[in-house]
Length: 423
Ligand SMILES: *[C@@H]1O[C@H](CO)[C@@H](O)[C@H](O)[C@H]1NC(C)=O
Ligand SMILES: *[C@@H]1O[C@H](CO)[C@@H](O)[C@H](O)[C@H]1NC(C)=O
Ligand SMILES: *[C@@H]1O[C@H](CO)[C@@H](O)[C@H](O)[C@H]1NC(C)=O
Ligand SMILES: *[C@@H]1O[C@H](CO)[C@@H](O)[C@H](O)[C@H]1NC(C)=O
Ligand SMILES: *[C@@H]1O[C@H](CO)[C@@H](O)[C@H](O)[C@H]1NC(C)=O
Image (cartoon, rainbow, N blue to C red):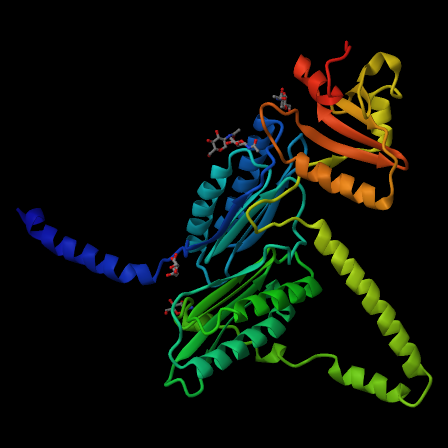
């Protein structure tokens, strides 16, 4: 009798609890970006063992109240390097819930050897090689809201100020994270909220560079009421609505002073009028040129991480390894001769059997670069009627292509262009 009378009361209590609790708990799993590498792993059981172990390591660390961690398994065949990061305003429970969602989404990539998920609240990524120091990569992008702020000019300058401050302060703050809010001057009491974050494994300079790119991306969202900028190793977000608690804002003021400007002035003052200034200009010009070319090289060598496709996978084999594998390209390892070169069977040190094609093509530097980008492209194509190109090797005038070895005749057709003798 009594328990029946309590039921409505309990229902009210539960309803009331439910009503107020969403504000307390929010894993922020609004999806911003997701992608799978196009290159599948070679040994499924090794891969899943490694993937599961790294994810379970990450989960353990999040259970210990950490909000950022990396984990890797590199012992056997298909290595896995993984990274998780929650925005630092997330509670431990929300961070774990966000990670759980990211994990189930990233597992839809199956046996892809790399994948990532970016939510508002957290970020999860794994690859077959280390990427912990990566920050800005091709594919970085803004994600803008649809609604436009009403007080355009006031709102725009508030957000620009907020983002500029976050850009300067965040790389100087321990753990590369800051949450900040700013009043919209002349905006009728409105406030804008912003968060900036870099991967904790990045260098300070790399964090700076990444946020600089993110800043120009996110500023392109204005005058939208909210915007985000995503990249491999940093994140920026602003909104006219609070997405973290008031008492979670970072005191960024101490980090805003432009460090080093006084020193610069003193040095310049000391050499003005002397021959020194000429030397400095020469040195600066030289430095700028090398800086630019090294930056270019860096950009060219990285894939389109956050875009639709991510090309990776082909291995640059060492010439000596291939020589050993084919017993110095011996006659008995020769599988046949084709239009562009001879094909040899090779036993790699890791036990894998491959077919090595030795090309007879004269090469210039340009041809070599073309060759390598072509290999990268082709090795990402998987089709049951194609044999898989695993990688390449170039040494002076010799170009070698390494294919999966198949004991049946389709190999001959493909490698030799026409049917010919083979063993
Ligand atoms: C995968 O690797 C394990 C050893 O790590 C080996 O026992 C197994 O045979 C391999 N599987 C395939 C399909 O190569
Ligand atoms: C890895 O974890 C998934 C999901 O928890 C599970 O289905 C799978 O059997 C595990 N694989 C290995 C090799 O442990
Ligand atoms: C990779 O494996 C998945 C299944 O795990 C498959 O759906 C996908 O087509 C494969 N991708 C390639 C490029 O082979
Ligand atoms: C913005 O508009 C696009 C296209 O109309 C829509 O697909 C998207 O869901 C909208 N985004 C938001 C945050 O409302
Ligand atoms: C921030 O405020 C919330 C209530 O709004 C409180 O539960 C929490 O303990 C506060 N956190 C800190 C660090 O003061």
